[in-house]
Length: 427
Image (cartoon, rainbow, N blue to C red):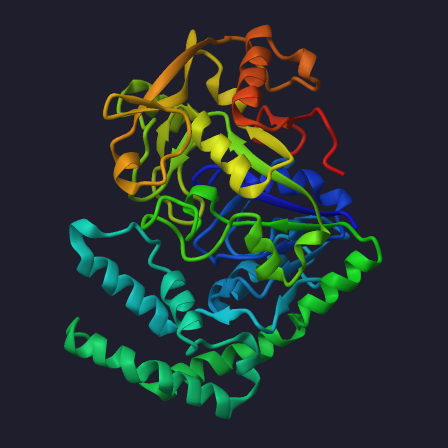
């Protein structure tokens, strides 16, 4: 019953696509269990680079069945566009399965997202404006549209009417926007039904039967631990649960079936959007990390905020996810620094704090306490084993492992599929 959860252990953008792709040849199913097209993975296969926003990374692995679980919110236009783009490049997408219980991002969800964020002004959260939050809100308010609703025009119309009763009042009276017509929304959504139908399935049944047959199932989270709606830096978070517990609810698989939980850590730290970031750099080092690491959001196109590695966050991710392993990515980006600072604790109002403060106020005022580790100048992109790394790079990895509280089982030393050092097998 080899079920693995793979998730981001920071604020997202840690390189989950590369990690998923590394496992792809040994995995039977790769499942996205939360989020929507507000997340992005870049996977490099040979000289080809693929940017995935909604589809599971496993779609690039022949023989693997990619699954969009019930916990995901699906923008049909983005889904079809992404499938079309892959098909044009010769990628077989026919095995994709989409949960009939996954919620649909409607045109009015996108409109509400954009106008609300604009209305907040200086208090904006930094959403991607893709309708993710409003769609999850509709889900909780029980006025959401599910994939299965596309196949019953009467139910679909009733649900769109119920949702727009309130939203049109808000759009017209609060935001001075034009009301959205029910029939236009229904017509647009019905236009996707036939194109999506071949992929729609009872994915809960499919995945549980696969596990009963000893198939290998990998659950892939979007975003990262510190963006979790319950366990992240609220309110600067996403609208779902990227943490390990979200895999169970977002895919319909019980927690007793999860065998390993793998956290993806970048060798430094990045964040997109607003919110506290204790190790953020505003100097030449920050700009160098951004430039060398190619730190631009796959989905948003926004430059990522960059900072040194934060061991406090890593320890927190280990705890709330029950991590069994880490995959450390982008170690090669740190080549060339004589010394590399690592945040080992925070200073808050004159106190040294070694665990993530639960208080939002304290975290906003947290100042990093750094320990300096010796750097290296050798090119590590050709390293195939841990012993191939320079001694200082080995020491850096071992220090991060000890500080983070779980073994580092793989190391990314470049963007390519084969530029990975595997220390311990995840399977």
